[in-house]
Image (cartoon, rainbow, N blue to C red; front, side, top):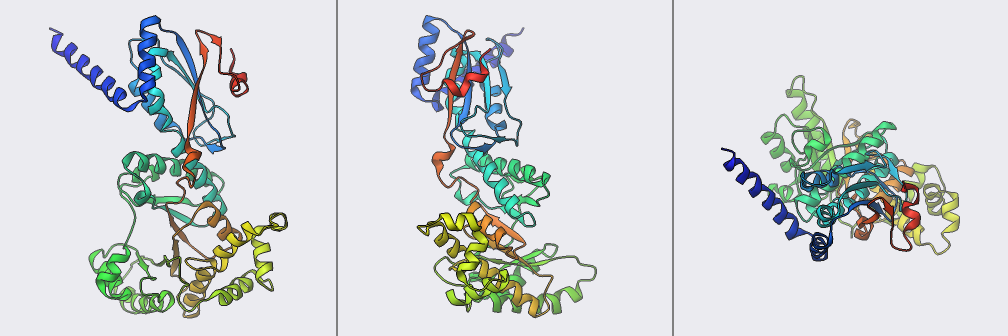
Length: 410
């Protein structure tokens, strides 16, 4: 009577085993065979990263719970840090205990879900707290190599953002995909237009008009760098929006914003290095380029950078080509001078944690940042490690790792 059900359960068990077998490192499969031949043991693993992160390990724990078999030694998971907590360098984040034969093949699946989420959480947290009055939009999707990475990165960003919000930051308000929208409390992704639509339309103004006609209930964010007329095109769209659209749209609360995504090899419309320096220096109420860099870096960092490595990076962010602090200041001043104070500014292109920090220190007048650069810049930073440090209740670990797990001895 229970035979069909038993067959179904056995089939599902085999499918899960095959899934793990095809994805784990081969030496783990061979290790499982050794343990099954010579006798199982109850083991405890500890998982850590070599750099400081924010804990975002729920995806890893879900995989562990899903694929650990139910008919062996019960699985025990011990979280050493709550989700969203800061984890210092080389500190175990969580431990798990169970059958060695059942756990050994799961290590690969667990570890690859730890690092990306944790480092993305850390970066998103730093970006949001460095620019607490700026709303962030997750635009990492094009940089991910598939759904797994995309989900892990978005989950991490959402965790980091949630912690930043506790300190008063606006943080991440959404992402560009429907797939990951739920991490930000939304039902769908956010976004308006890519550069291709501006080219298709033939002008920035026409692209804005086409978008507004097709999506009449949406706020409007217009890309303004396609024709290298960031400021002129923004003003042209403003005249149309505020003089022709809103007066005929009774009761509308739709907002207008301009996204600057200037190519990294050119300056925004009309700017050059000298003009950019003048804009930023005046904005910061300092006399020259050097004082502007010092003001943004801080005295100690400026004085210790004797080889000018960081100073040059800061100059690029403040006065350089692409989306610089100077270009954002110029956009704000251009809009305000024509009475369009309510139009908002969106920055995108290369907004790494470093760039966000410099924008924050410079008090750049940006309202929203679209970025995928919370994904780890050095992928090696995401490499997590798991070590068995307990065998049947006895503490034992390879020489050199003792201190990492010393405090976890029974």
